[in-house]
Image (cartoon, rainbow, N blue to C red; front, side, top):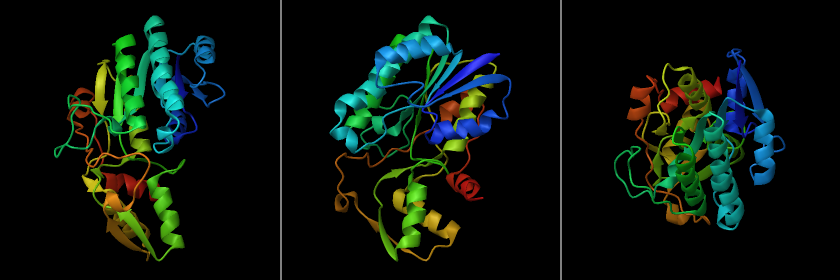
Length: 281
């Protein structure tokens, strides 16, 4: 029986994989939190991987605090770059299949058309730079890796935009939401299922892939969809990013083109509204 190691097991994606894993008893699943797989301690990480001996790794663990990364650059690069490099090298040396999760933040947001896997990368914050460095090292150390870039992840688990909006809309009469950052949300359940489908598929085609739900929206429009589906009374006001300054700059446009992953792995990608409805059931 093949063993799948899931790093970042307590995050949104890891938590959704845990739910789905009960339907895939043909694998031995190892869900690793920070104590079981320590991404910020490379010596310890190497020995942990040697002990677990996985056949497949879903590397969902990452340093994801985008604003905090501006002041914790070393830690962000250790987790998002050096640990990924080590995991990829381990996978290469031990014939382990690796799916590594990356981000739309590797782009600068200057595009006006959906970004495919060949689009020029140019991250504009420390988080994005650390994730891009991880991508580069991952494919250098293990060209057989699969990297999935995703965006705007939401789930019933962990902290995310949907849960924050639900809370604020119940607490306040009016909220402001940025209306000039364009992309598409990703329901963690859908991405988790896609990862399992890739492993189950008849062929393994390495390289970079994009995955998010279908739909091109702003955060403001996402908030309006949440409001409508939950029948909240709160007034939602769209504001420009300039009116809501953050330590880390965000790309203004990071809509991902999913053509490659749909064609290579025969995946159907749901619209974000359909997936948002599923989360609320």
